[in-house]
Amino acid sequence: MASYRDIVRYFQGYGAIAAFSIAASSLFEVVDLTVPYAIGQILNVLSKQPLDAPLMAFISAIATGFNLQVSSELSLVLLLAIVFVVSVVRAPIQPWIGSWFHWAIPLRARRDRADLTIQKILTLPLSFYDENNPGRIAGRVARGLTNHTWSYPEIAGQLIPKLARIFGIFIVICLLEWRIGIAFALSFMAILGFSLKGLRYIINREALLDSYMENTESRTSEIITNIKTVKAFAAEPYELDRQRQRLDRELTVVLYRIHRGYVRLNMWQRTVVQSCIFGVLVMTLLATLRGELSLGHFVTLLTVSSMAYAELEPLSILAEFLARRYASMLRFHEFMQQPVGSDASDLNAIARSASEYQFTGKIEFDRLSFGYDPQQPILHDINLVIEPYQTIALVGKSGSGKSTLVKLLFRYFEPTQGHIRIDGTDISSLAIGSYRARLAIVHQEVDIFNGTIMDNLRYGNPTASTEDVAAACRMARVDEFIHELPQGYATVVGERGVRLSGGQRQRLGIARALIVDPNVLVFDEATSSLDYESERAIQLAMRSISGTRTTLIIAHRLSTVRDADKIVVLDRGRIVEVGTHDDLLKHNGVYARLHALQESADVLPRSDLL
Ligand SMILES: Nc1ncnc2c1ncn2[C@@H]1O[C@H](COP(=O)(O)OP(=O)(O)OP(=O)(O)O)[C@@H](O)[C@H]1O
Image: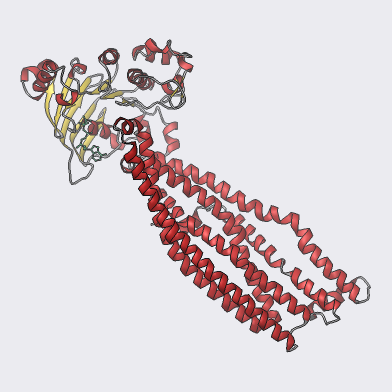
């Protein structure tokens, strides 16, 4: 659970400079009080009333030091000099000692934390992304960082110095008339206690609002990602209606619970503050009439107490801002406290040791069992040996565990039981980044990053030579379409560039994988969403790769895997058959049945085949 301590720790590393700048700003606020005091004493000089003893001693010391006569003129000049130093001389210094640091610290901290946030995003386990969509994560991170950045100057540059100023005012009032000082302190404690109680209620509502807002953002992000499906199903009115309901729910909370709470709090604060100001005026006037206060002290006391009460309104606005942001700051820290995946490694180490291993590509699955939920096993007792440079096909019904087996090979998840070995070494004992760098995968949906074709090709190996890229592109048959693109390899694709067809993306994905020169290459249903012509091109590419490295092919279409050295048939998480295409046909088991179905039913929808 995140707490206010995490908010303080966000600025860790800047403690000394923060303490200095906060102390300096507080000092400026307190020193400011000399102005109304000096003006009160000027009034005493003008009305021929005595000056305060400490001030008189100071004026006498100056007069003696400079061989001058103590006079009203000298007193006025010195008092004016104090006002000049405290107001005019201070003015150009204050922004550099106060404001500069009040922004420099959060801006630097923001950079540090944004860096950590990216590290966190890169190292969170895949299961986290299965449960949280990009909109929710991005919204939480962005709001968290922004709210910390905005809150720091308000706390360090305003809230704390203003509280110091109020404390200074209390001391001044006590020195002038202690009974009014006590009344002043009591009124402040009452106002602060009452405000804190009100704010606590509002903060809870803000947390509710924040979670509602995350839900709305999350759905908006889903709508954007799945916009084709939304339109295809003519679901726009439904989505609009759902989002409207969410927005209305947010408005109800923000308007009737939160905003009304602030207005009510503000109403009470104002009423109490004005009553206190009036009370202090009456008490001060009575003390002056009784002769307990000079005219100068009367003016000073009224001025400083009004200054103190005047601070209450900006302070309560600040407290309101902080309360509005508090919940989202805590949610940011909850995100940052998410445990990283078991595959999280030192991010810098991955790059340094990318070529640490070289494998022949022999893979052994040894009594392997696994379940995303340990109570519900998905894979049971998998035993399989893949020899170097072999091409192995994994086939089986949807949900039989083919992709899960590959996820375990990539160490996205750890097995519940058993081992996976590469060249005889348990993969769990290898440096994960270096190990993965020797593997490559081509998914059904090839992700294209915004950038040129060349950037995308070199994604896994930025230092690949042009010859290596060209060779991989020939093997993956990328060269067949690259020349038709406006700028060849320099054509911008992705977010703001030329769109590639499904088959072109697949071929680009294969070339990208080959450029890494992996020891093990996996095709995870790489041809499933392609038309026959594109599928044929990919099959030819696969055929030319076959024998150059260990290759695992997950496929629904059996025509893709006919040439594999070994076909492994999975059923409900168990290996039920292993052999070549011909062996398995002869065996007349599950594979033969699936094959017969596909051969005889080319006209059937694909979902009926497997
Ligand atoms: N991230 C996950 N969390 C929980 N369960 C999952 C997760 N991914 C897959 N599963 C479950 O694991 C089982 C095996 O899924 P897997 O994707 O490995 O099957 P598959 O044979 O590759 O299927 P397909 O051919 O449809 O891709 C399924 O029941 C699926 O619901």
